[in-house]
Image 1 (spheres, rainbow, N blue to C red):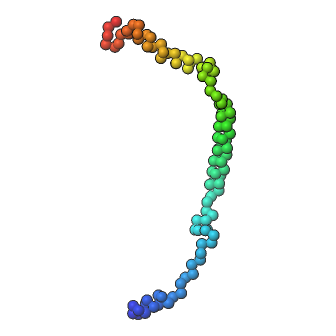
Image 2: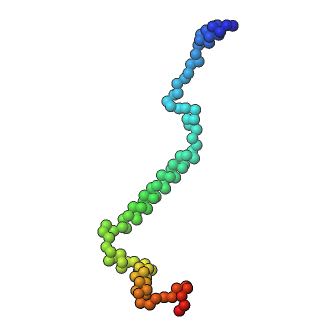
Image 3: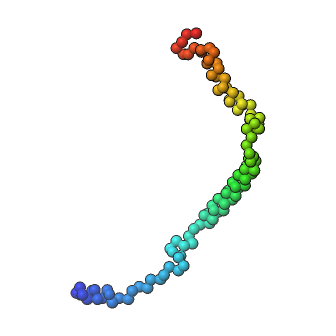
Length: 104
């Protein structure tokens, strides 16, 4: 068989009909497992609970913040913590405390 006969033989063959992709359904269509659906439902439920929780917390937040009420409602620990730094400079001004290398 010569080269021209081979080329004419290849060109004379009828092409294999290519079936179009029916509705975008490729090879992997329909192979997702039900686990994916379960995960989506679980995530949706979690989001609903998070939204409910945040709205409950936001309802407790006052519209206007009053500093006097906040100071009165602050726990004693916070009040002591705020008062301690204010007392330290007064102690430093009065009497010098000996350091590690100084003798008392």
